[in-house]
Image (tube, rainbow over the protein chains, first blue to last red):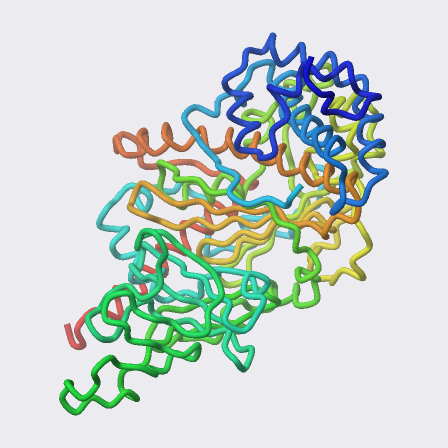
Length: 111
Length: 420
């Protein structure tokens, strides 16, 4: 058993940290396209019911001074947003009819 | 019968009779010869937005910009007098590209006290003056005053930095922008500095992608997922509330019910949980009174206004945040697409998450638009069909293509030798 990396109230999500705790959109997007809908649904079903609670937890801290475990939870929230596009909206990893189009996010605020 | 009143002529298109109502040609988007004319007539004559002032925060801040259509490489730099200037990115000694980092064809940015050429060490001040020549006594009557960096016309409007590659621009930037665009003089773009930037290399003519964002007729067919499946109306249309044309520029406004006032089933769960989504954060900080020019049709309830500034700039304003698109042609059938979303800097984690959601959703639907480009370009290039009917909701598509052809024809008339 490795060190817990999320706030203890969210310990049940530890199993998703290695796959979905990704600091940049580019990493989250690539992980989404490399995942099956079933894999993403598993993450979504486990985390979505606790999303609002997770946002409230992170929101207790200043944006420029998040403790490491809250930062990881925030990255997990960002991944849930990414995965929700596939699970809730398109029912497939890629946006419907996006063909060979690519749109890279080349700049974003941190975190 | 539409929901929104049209002008007295009965349609938006007929309100601008010079546009006509017949089918249009897209040869301006498939012909290599037309592209060569467009480079001269448009991209070397029109004012082009290349950056925002926030990208050059300090004395010595600089960035380079590649304008393939000219072609030109331009340095933007903030001088000791805090004035932003533009120069051609060429060392006056042997023509080496002056400012670049790892690879000369890649744009770069940074802060410096002066520019030093990598090749023979010539140095230039932030105002472009040549200040140092290695072994200057070896040269023949070299007067440094004759060898400053070649300036590029550069003007700033409401924080947007524009350049003009013409030797003598025909209009000042303000004259070029005209009353409809300068109606946004008081919009506080400078307060919206939290940006998510995007870049794409698309396989179509630049105008074909611009067309996707200046009509909403395509929304129900291409983006049905913008409405959750359970409440989706398969026969839904889309009607814009206001269209306006001013010189080469265009605007379209839509009406909009505030997202949080809609029934919950019209939103996706992720939108309800994060209070953000398709139209951005549900609530944005007070950024002061917004100028009347933002909603030139006085639409109530107003949704968005999408300003298309000729030739290749789009600013789409949602009230408290905005999107910006630029389409840079790289050949007759390819272009570089730059985009960003700009928000008030997040004051809390919750606000940052709202911004992330808006930036993610934007990309989803922009990829659907971009997914049409390769097929459209290839089909147009077959040349089988050359008459395409446009409806009244597509008035701005009609206007862009007419304006481009008008600029090219004007250029050709001026290029004709006198008396022929």
